[in-house]
Amino acid sequence: MSAPARAGRGVVVYRWAESTRLPTAGARRALGEALIRLGVEEEAREDAQLVLSELVANATEHACGPYEVRLQRILSGWVCEVEDGNPRLPELPEFSREPLFPPEEGSRGGGLDSLLSLLGERGRGLQVVHQLTGGGWGFCRTGETKVAWFVVGAAVT
Image 1 (tube, rainbow, N blue to C red):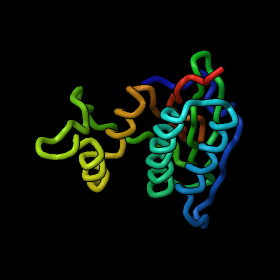
Image 2: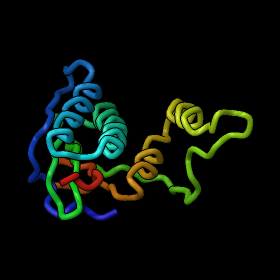
Image 3: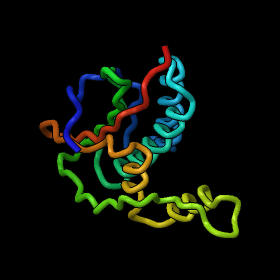
């Protein structure tokens, strides 16, 4: 998971501080609105908002501000960045090649039930990020700060 092409050069879509109420919801809403304006398909927007929720929650819980969410254009779509004031890169878990939300016997597919139970367990958020982005995400240090980034699906033209 290497760094995005030009970390820190995107368009700011949301900023928050330690005192901001509900930063995850605010960031999710701001990203959704920006991606709608950019013509990104609904499924890619929804996945991006879930990924962003996890990265914003992690930044708010484990790092100091100021915090910022940015978007930058790449050839195949967009990169979303979450910058925080802690330059320390997190230790990454080992990621399984198996799907995180396999259908469960005796349920209506089990995918959503599996996802909700997984999200209820601490320490699994980056696994969800990895699954939803197909591995198109990572962290990089930018001087005195850190950027978590992920690739958002291609824009509709």
